[in-house]
Image (cartoon, rainbow, N blue to C red):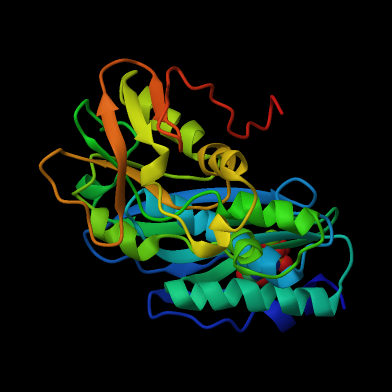
Length: 308
Ligand code: ADP
Ligand code: MG
């Protein structure tokens, strides 16, 4: 099967929304945005061995490659609409492509996203997805709007994906923690409820404290108090590791794709979300650990591609 065969068989006949006037197959796609909406765009590349383990099941790779992109749109408060997919494949492995498509299109359908085009080349395994979403231009959520006194909130538990990746590397390939790493659920639904409500937002891809620091820096160099005890937990996570390992995963583990956001102090925390701290004027992060001890000036040790 050549490049055109792959496109024809796997990507040409994808389910399309009414907003897609022309999907994969021509020289470019034609879409019809909703009148009055702003368009928001994002793109992420996943490399084998860097963003997912070598030999990771194709279904998980397909799901994750879309999920991490949709999470960026969720962080903007945008509704996901269209995607482009650039695939670099070492060879045409039909079973792998079937698995990839199952993961990719299952999530696409759940989130109302249409694949409108892409590119297919031969090379080392690498997946680039570009997504476009819609948000009323003045209601897009930014990193820069947090102010001292704001509530600091999260959409769900963090640390699960890091625990899941550790399990995977130890040979444990099933369970809720591995699932959290393999098929994270982008917070697209919750994100729409934060439109025009949150003063700032970011998705947690690199780790809670690392991504919190991005909000604090973008918001003019302010700080935050974080209570580890307030972080949501699951029973599977509670039976993983010891207290110190769990706290490490919660504060520094990436890949959960929950949203971290701030609210004016008088605004109620949306249902399903949890307040984990508060924004402060001192330019540093203070953390109250799971034993109740305060730690000042917490070192930022989230994943950084250039230092680790
Ligand atoms: P061109 O040489 O004109 O760029 P391509 O052969 O790259 O054309 O692509 C032909 C059509 O197939 C285009 O509409 C393109 O968007 C689509 N396409 C190629 N690869 C993919 C893919 N991985 N997923 C979805 N659509 C794809
Ligand atoms: Mg092309």
